[in-house]
Length: 451
Image (tube, rainbow, N blue to C red; front, side, top):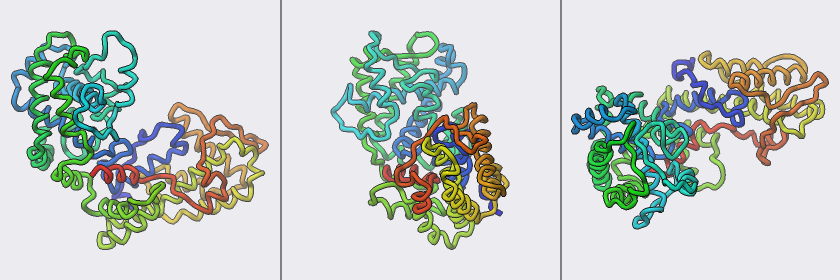
């Protein structure tokens, strides 16, 4: 029984109707996270941004440990900072905005930067070009920021859950639990050895204390960029970010730290990492199946880790077949199922035969999909059952079906997703049998490229 190896899925992981029409994200992410333990996600996949997040929290830890009186006074003065959490969230947004502007080349080009992976740069360009005569305002408030809903979609928001899993803080950005103290102890060596990071930390702490904490604005502190751009102290911050984090390459001690924290030094995570590295020079998409198949013998002596990799190899074809069937039926060129009876019946048989695993009782959607694949009945009944399931997934999100089956076996289309030309027909799909889900290998490749 594999249930013990998997946590319950997060049904909110994919709400985009265009990418998850069968509710399969909640399944494949569960199998992927059995390996990566929620420390790697589809949107938290850059080692430099992981590092920048930890650095910002290191600044906050220093502030709260060393300047408690100033913290208390600032909390009393700014009405938007109703708690330490509100204050920390606001300061995180402020530091994120400063880092984005620093990497933009608008105010400092003395140190070249690599922009790949920097969140908010494209949005910053539109904000900068908006023509607002007042210019941009840097605000230390969780309700503001360059990005819309930045507290969720910015650096701190996207990387919050993985950093919680690693033990840096809890959901309220508290750092004093014994497990959190241990994590901070482990990252202290690279924080202390990285001279440009130390310099930037000192600059940020000084700026927050001497500028943000002494502002007498209402609600929360803010800085007019038009004024700040002429301030040598602010210019030092911009140069400091470019010096410390302008390159994707990290300090060697930081690289070693992230290999440990991301779980790619041991077990199935290490096996996937090493197997993926063997394909690093290949052009084109990641060969998901080959990577996991080549990873399997690397954990032959670790039964639990072997099961995690083997389980993905077993379930991935089944999930891909189910998703492809729906995406094929949703093509506007597919008018009548009778016109494609032979290919659909062939794919139906392949889908059923791909059930080489015991459905995990912790994953009700997987159980439902296996029931659909094994369901008796004629082609019309089978397609109708599959589209009814699809409709229930979409309606559960407040959306609507892509396609409906009429009584005369014609299909009525509402949305037609694009299919790769490599498998735009059932015949091509059966020939290639591609995996349509990454199991976090795409994210792992991003990490690999940044370490």
